[in-house]
Length: 170
Image (cartoon, rainbow, N blue to C red):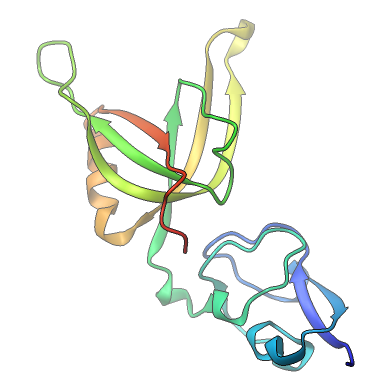
């Protein structure tokens, strides 16, 4: 069997990022009957974006690319004070839980707003003097749930992320 020039991700490619030659590395591989499923030198599309995350070093599936208007998930920045489990990493899934203020200096019972949202990125930061440590997580939220999540944040709700090992793969 002969090899074919295919493309792999040079670095992680996030949902919504434009996929162009600067984000790709050419690799010679034996794909056999699967050749049509991956991005090859003969099929390098113009103006396409990632519809799903492609990890660094992975071959780029042709089905992971699409038009910018087809991206139905947007990254929302969620700050969490409690530590996330080690399994919660870019590409894994979390549920977004929200507890709204109850008007009595407390919070109402938490409700799950989003199930199985994909983590796009995690950034940890600590405050000055080594005080509290806060983690900012970019979570991909479907357009249909976006207003609810942003509304909860705007109303000073407590937002928690719960790792979901059974989250729907995309």
